[in-house]
Image (cartoon, one colour):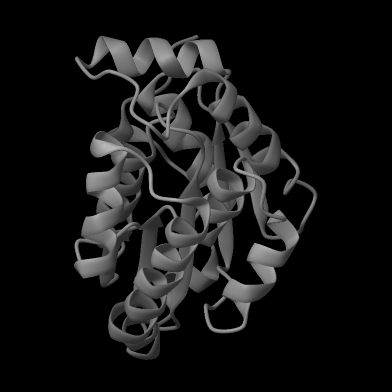
Length: 212
């Protein structure tokens, strides 16, 4: 069956959607899962509920995040420097955007967060649990973490179909290790595993249903 068009989806509105309380939502997964598109679709849907929404991504466009983005094309930094840059970028992001937005009662939706650091730096030999501990010392835990999941072959096919080539963060072996780390997070009460092999509409509907 084909998914209903996004505009016609009718998902029950949980009570907290209608309140002024903040909500912190993170979308994660290996590249090619459609995180950026799903973040925007979810943000647009919340706005139809009359909510103020802040969308952002990591790495950010700040000084540390810019260095990290450049390294994806020019060659990865040393594992130690890469982890240090992610922590500095995230610390600035938390203090300047995430915490103020939540304090103002807004919904914050992130495309990647410290779970990506656990996965991608974990694939380089760091202990994911230790990375998580370092981050949660200063970074708030999200209310909802959506792990958008596809197999690595599909991910690489999607990267190629959009005209890109796999960068230094997107090599097959590395992506498989990252996917395994993401999947290891399932089972925690705030974590939702979403099969992203379907259409954009189907994936978005699954996210909304999980929130409901």
